[in-house]
Figure 1 (cartoon, rainbow, N blue to C red):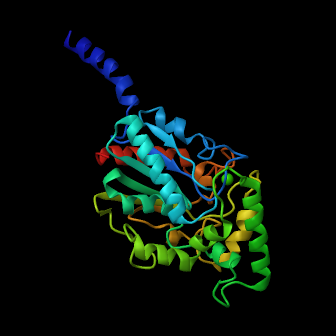
Figure 2: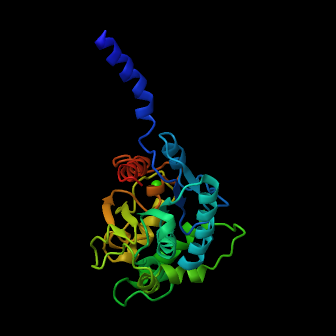
Figure 3: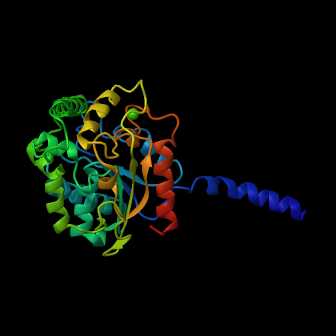
Length: 303
Ligand code: CA
């Protein structure tokens, strides 16, 4: 009889236990990078990720900010949408997960309104600039990239942007975006918004700053799947880094923020958001799994 009761209890507990792995205390807000949405749509940007997080209990929100603009302009747009999400849900805070420029965009909001943010997770975030932006602005340090590489990097970059971007009705400013994403532009931004940023060249940052928890993870391989149309372009833009480990668009050292979960997944800049449409490295952990694990980490941290 006791055995039977235990069995019934176990069965009764199973569905609840299976459905709470990603059940964070605060809603999760996914913040996109520099690309627009006309071709891929705001939901599909994080391909299959919102549904995978929601399946085990997370409340997940997508936002849309300018595809191309400065960290500050995008950050103000995000702040407005965070306030709307808080009003709609009654939650006291949100967890931000930002891809690419979505990381400094999220960091801006956490810096100016830390009371509204539980955590920031940088996913292949441009936290110390991108050599690709430096090349696009013609400010790459002399000798770091050959002239031939400069041309291929520029062509690769414009091809990726053209493939993924489109007008969204929001103000777009490509020069402001590129300047913000350059090494010098991001260094200037970091002076005003230093929370979580490593003070060493390639270390970890503060795990918590002004009550906000900071995390990061990212990839270190530009070419990962022969079927993905973006991979050849990632291989071209990766030439901007002169041999430093990168994901095709951001160096692994620039990706680091707060507690570094991993910065060496065999994934490129778009693999980490499960693009293009799920074409990722078959020999690496699936990025959706990494998002779920991070939600579980936030849950276990009481966030
Ligand atoms: Ca891919």
